[in-house]
Length: 320
Length: 171
Image 1 (cartoon, rainbow over the protein chains, first blue to last red):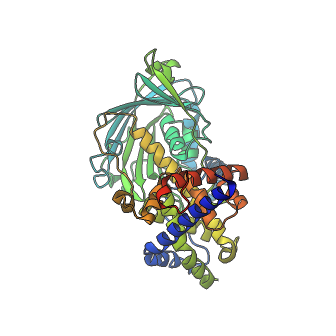
Image 2 (cartoon, rainbow over the protein chains, first blue to last red):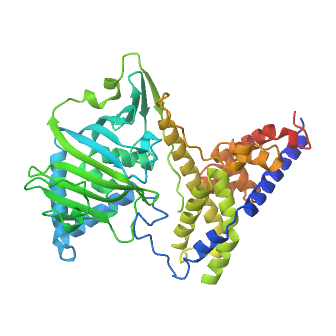
């Protein structure tokens, strides 16, 4: 085939694609869609969505770097210019600072993690959106979890070098290479939640939330029937979305801290595309020293198991 | 200014939506993504002259949002298929035109485009919409050479799939 012939063929291909796009542009009834967009214009600068439940943009949740800076600034302000911050916010920051110190100690903590999907969310077909029970061990920023999701059992974790891994059975392992910044946002958040390290949790998961310490459970808490009474002397911190912020997964959260400054319970009220997804609860059930090996993929595989390597692509900026 | 923005949205939205649908293969997801992109851009309407330069920014945002969504979706599906004996149906976001598998040319082009990797699909569609190689490279954060390679591969695969419909039959 000559170059001219190739060129002609490709022009024809381009024409076909162009015509197809033209047809598709005419095919969709976009009047209502356009009206919806134009309807938001009267305000010179559009406000950001007020809550995850009503936010069409709730899938996006800023970069971890931005969160870290924002959160760090928030805490600096909380400590240095406390006059403008409510006492409950300062108390929450103080409690979490103490918890952060305790959780950096080399102690293995085991949490019982339960996910209860919202009845309207789970279609009872896809087990990955259904109820799940997980035993989660964590120390510092490493963790490993044994999850039962429907009929499926999945073991996953992050080792001491920060590598995330997944194993569907003892004969197969998937090692995911990449730093937290290189992980896709959903996996990075999954990792941050599961590691249960307070700085990571606060900076990477709850950065868009106001944190307020609460003594006895508040009136708001009584509306949430799935919360049992907190332990005597425990501190409870409520996380609610900051005004104008949205979050792709979490609408609110509760952290319960005991007298030894250990995070003993975490409850996340989650959303999916603005609709309630369900409640995830983490409850501390054990502390022990289980050793480093358990946090590595190889500890959960047979000697002749296949280990595959996955290198996630960094996501691209959507709007600069 | 509001009138200008309104006119810009009215003019650009149908094409942006069709493009997003072509990339993500799901109308409701495409609507969410495009709406999200508009919202983000509109919050910067005092920074950018959207009626004049917004369309390029919009298509860049839609492209990357769609590619990111598609990659996340693929990852989610790959996780779901880790367990081969899982006895649940994987939900597919196929367009009716795909399912129909019509031999009509328009449908055939749609099906052939849908079989391309999403970045190739984005490159060829941005190209036929009049964007230069360097503009596409900027949008996709790729080198110009990579854009040419992706475009060539897209054309080659489309030519192979659409051979029966081409006037110049490719051997």
